[in-house]
Length: 449
Image (cartoon, rainbow, N blue to C red; front, top):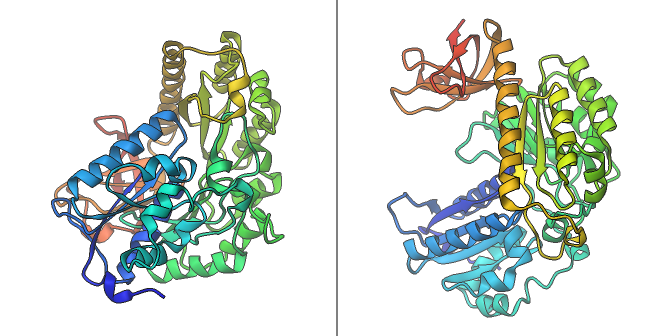
């Protein structure tokens, strides 16, 4: 039984670390609490509730999580502090011992955040003591089965629709399956209903998020292509973006459908991790460079203006110098737009630790710098190809007197001068002509048509 009266008039602060999926879930937490009578605290105001949604993708992420928890506790004395997310799942005992933390919710429990919070306030459960003993979190991967629905925008223009959670892949460097469990998803019908609700609220664009969204359908017997086709029919939503798709799960039929679809935009984000077949084998990835190159070239054949972002990891165990050179040359040969470069980080309990060849931190930084330079060159060239062309841009709210920014369907960031910008352009898709780069080269200037 939830005591709704206990929530009335309370204030809350939220901090999110990590991926788009985490931001989507935090936004849903905030919305749920708002519906219970909790308002978001101002920056200078001390909150009654603090919620930190954590990431554990690297050792640096773990360290930052601890820093943020300590800071939130220090800046909000007396607040009820809740920690959830991947770090909370993997290191629950460590988190529970941090002074000031009242509730630690793992992957199963976070879907019932309000109930746990209510129980803790009313002392129905001795929540903090249980968390410290690890009783909430001695959960094996196979036992993480709950799915927390999430379709929210928070302070953003775009909505984020969570279509899937968990992963069955167990790549040698990764802890995500341990943190989020096996792949699972809701029904297409329920996701269409959430998209329809977003449209009623005025949403124009939805980003499909998840851990391994191409694996959609494991728990419902449906397919990701089925989902795409169903969402494409939702009236009012003008754009869909697919946040990340594993190369082996990008069906050729999916590419062909997106190329002709009403609302799915020419924008893909595809994790490669390494452009060396030897390293891909060590990582236990489920594809090789030949398959990856086929998918990239097919996308460009069907959608010549497609923006393609690629995740790549440098300095992983076993990445000898010649393997990195293979990776660099492979990426340089592909018509991709942008690289998201991540230095490899040792994760306790992962199979990668048994791989003998280790890359030192200095060399990791050198390799990352080289790939980031390549990324900048490719992104700038992609932007330059579009100068002088017309495009539709979804604009985002800007401070009065400042330039407005937005994105084209193929994810080019656009800047509208303060002289042209108007408040009513927020969350509107407008036709523009793309001009030259802005002063910091981060956007193309635009003129309204």
